[in-house]
Length: 254
Image 1 (tube, helix red, strand yellow):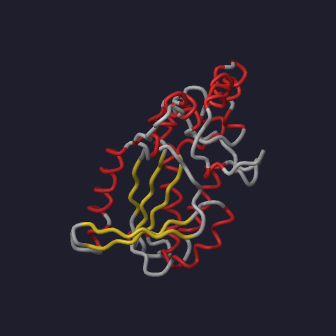
Image 2 (cartoon, one colour; image 1 turned 180 degrees about the vertical axis):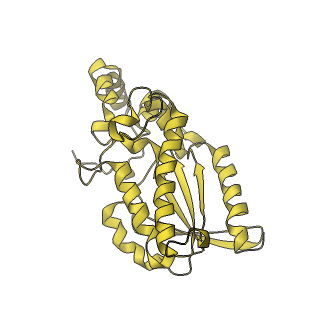
Image 3 (cartoon, rainbow, N blue to C red; image 1 turned 135 degrees about the horizontal axis):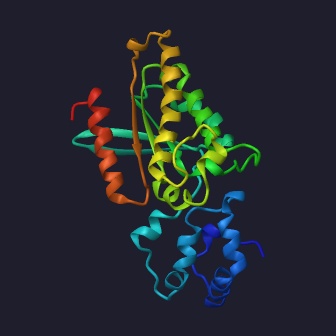
């Protein structure tokens, strides 16, 4: 039976019980431990672990329930809001390969570029191509965007997201397996985060030097990097304030 998941408003108890039994099965758990080999939402274990509460009559989603939900970004989405009497507009575009051809319409009059990359995808493959590493693809895309003429003097805000998931998987999935140049401790999340940041920073530095004709002291844009956890509201508040203070202040009165 085909069912659009976005139109489901109730979840019958008999189905909930069946899913709970599956989730308690050792084979399913073993399959979950190999989740990097297939495409499973990061939030799947959260919802499976809270299935009894979620399927109760009268269920009202908590803040975490909402924060962990996900829908793929398609097309071009604009969000307008005010910060200290200054009107801001954020244009959100999809990162999937099929969405990238639409970006050309979003590049004029941009005062800052926000690039969101996942820290936890170092051991995963693309949905579009199971032979290509997600993080390597993200790094390559980052470099491609930086070389576009529209962003020659645009400051870049790099969000390295999913710190929580990286910390969860790093004890059993070693970064050096996928990035042999990593020489840090195998189970050290902080060392892994720094290594990944260095890869993005190195990509940025190379593109910035090329854009300025190799004159390292003449860079007309800056890179601001932040580790983020999208489900941690306090972290996001702090990051947003830092972004506003460090980047937008260069262009707007705050």
